[in-house]
Length: 269
Figure 1 (cartoon, rainbow, N blue to C red):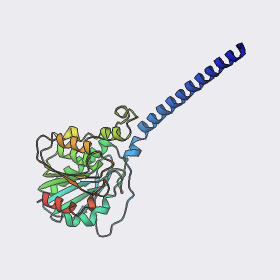
Figure 2 (cartoon, rainbow, N blue to C red):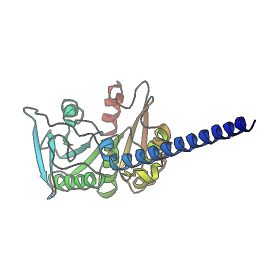
Figure 3 (cartoon, rainbow, N blue to C red):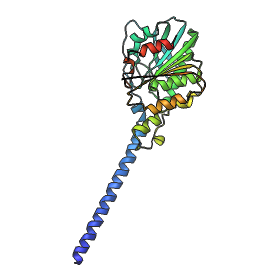
Figure 4 (cartoon, one colour):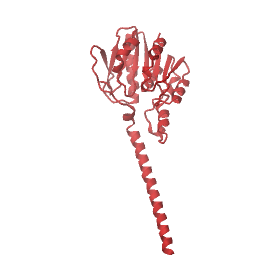
């Protein structure tokens, strides 16, 4: 009887140790994952594109003193201009044909973020912001007014620019209120507030924007939660916001909707 009892105690002890070991392994793995997310977050947020050659299309190299930014220049010589900031994995050169006709009455500047498409350096939030200001300050000397447009992460850059400079009109495609809130939706099991240093707080800057604003969202967006965009829209205080949701489109296909270009053309008149 004693041997059986001792055996049962030993079994419970072994099970207890196994459970403690599993918890320890899980905890260490979780902490390591958090550290990896913190260390490599920029590599996950920014996905630089390769430089491409587009015969017959001009470009400008902006030397900021820190980096050299390549900016495609469409329809040069127009009185008004528009500066465009793309998504996190978007090669802005692929917009050249569409934007030449979509904004035919304006000179269009397609900005390759630092580290993207022939621009030097590595992308990070403050760098993207300072490059946006540098682009505006350089090109405003050539035009009477400048509007700006941003898609996805580019919407954060365009919002920043519109909050710091005099922008005629602002177009935002599939924007978010902040990556923190977006990440919390997809990675709720991680302490996102502590991990993310790239804040890209668009909602926090919306209240300072005075430019007329168009916001285009995708009805079937699986990347940016609708609540995130809705909270962003509510953050505007000083301007009129036109918000349009395009049905049967996703985050990466919203521009294919037949009304996409019509909505933008109408807004820019």
